[in-house]
Length: 373
Image (cartoon, rainbow, N blue to C red; front, side, top):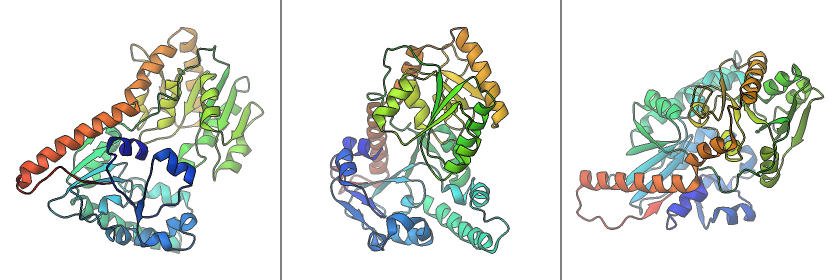
């Protein structure tokens, strides 16, 4: 996303709490100088940044963007708290209200093993404080954009603010069909963290021993996934983008079990011409066309359990046998989320917001805008 924003606004200057990218990553992003906060100089910050969550709001407000006419914040936590003044336009692309302070608080505390502990009580006090800070600073944002209708509703609940939806960019120029016949295996690809439910996917396939599953990725839940994976499940670990594309192109379907804000991976799979079996919640309901569509690109299931997923796979195979899915339909659906579409829509949204801002403030003294990102 940062790469596409820099293409859309090449004159923008970039600000961040910390920056620890490799030179390869910087070159890939087309990134020049990044202006960072005082946290950049804390030893080991790249490994321990989560420990500094309580001071991140203060560190964010220490960044000086006062020379810019337009500030674009890309925020899942504290970036929307950047300090701006009245004549600046602050446009926030909100990836989500701070998850651990709002809707997903109990889930985070449970997964962290903090429920019912003294540390948990301290964590709750901290999260209460962060929620109040987040709600207060949301009022300083002039206009919100967000990545899905699912998160738009979350923003309305948390901040009582509306947001225009601009779907995030997917590299549909890279993820393309191969034109070769697909194989007989299913695939999933993700970081192994609890809410992705990769262990549940592996467990579902353990009950379907005549189906093959390929899993791409690594993460904290690696041991949990391996413990339930049967001999029909192949764990490949980290794979390059090129290798992942090849695996997607040859798969029967992509399996997705997360309640995700948007979900890039299912769209990448469809861009490769393969259908998706996805949990019918969150962003997947906006990116996957289910069996009730004229041209379905996958199946949406409701029971987030190994048994529910196993049944969904059987239903999918029945529909597949009836010729319900086509590579062309999957590809056309994915093209709705292209990088060029994202850049065009974002530029238009900013132009419209700037016009409203000038009308509100009065035209006196406004010149062509300078950007801070």
